[in-house]
Length: 506
Image (cartoon, rainbow, N blue to C red; front, top):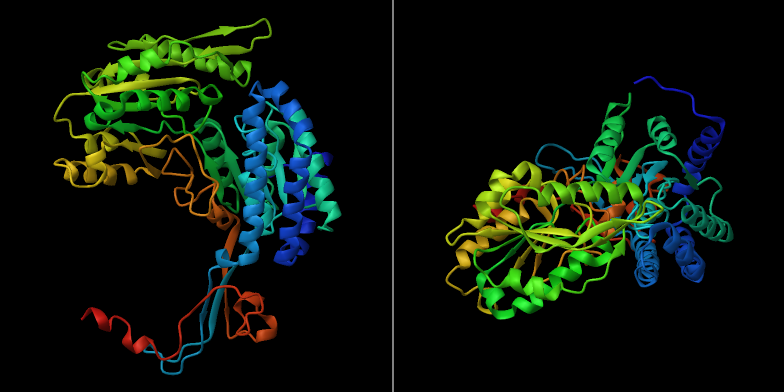
């Protein structure tokens, strides 16, 4: 790849981020935590003004956006506590051992350090939680990496207003200059990603653009990590017992999950496998009689949704459960009501190419499976990677004592091999901001199936391991010192243990 000179404006941004990287990496975790919490507090204080801008630019509701600001602030505070706790550093200490079974062992100590400047390509559908100050940005800053955000074109004014809030908080908490920037334009983002001073990239968006950016990151003279959250259809499996016990409840929850935010969520249930002849389609039809229309994020997304919807409705064997619709106003904005269709399993197989692609909007497909269908085999047959997979069980099935328990266990195993999060008796559009969360999955759900963009493990994406051998204490990172002044969790392998390794298994 041939390197090209950046424009003066981009050069100033990248040069400032690179210059700030050593100082930011050296800041005390407590100081970074105070800065991140200050950003969270300032974000919530600016909520009325920011939500007003977001409503105008995205068409999302005030309630949805207000809740998203709160979620974003909580996420920032979670990372503040995470970086002070220090567990994410995975500090390991192997003291010198003259009696090591392979010969004298040196003192070896391992931790993680910040990668350096990172560019984050923000998302359209979460203008707060996956945008300028979203989860990727929070984990990048917590890791001690300067952050350059490529603002999404769907909410440029909001991106700049949010950046102002963050910059003021960083100044008030005396963080190094140059650690936070927002840029605009796809070409600008690509040029920055190519720059050798950038050490990692993050992205939330379509498979096509994500693959393009991932390939750029991989083809640089010095390749860099790239963490993309791309496409997911989030299959759901509902048993006959679950439908018999609570069809109306399942129908209501399903429609809420499909229609929320006009179906523009990466965790929307796109496919639902149900027994042939079940009562669920009728329950869904009855529950969906009066669903309101909702504006899609922008004209381009609305047009893409209209095309996907038409292709699905035109596929052989597909029948309508809730017709829904989409209309365009004078400004080209699309307004949609949910569409739900059903198709027999054989029809799904026959029309696979036309049906399986994600429909980014309020549409979902019920796949009716005949009695005796090996549900566990459907995951590898139809899907690559997904963010989530869901299973709705009957009461007895949930105890693990039903006659079909072996089949259900096989299905859970099959789902877990191809998703990042397995849900039971719930809906995938609720993503809890909590330490154990996993928001990632095998390709094409994400470009790196060992990573997550939600939960405290997200910080590890922007660190790299370093081991120190026979280092004097004065030159060790504090988390690797014997006195451990920060109280970080340390995994110590004491001298003298190696001779007993494996003995208990003889």
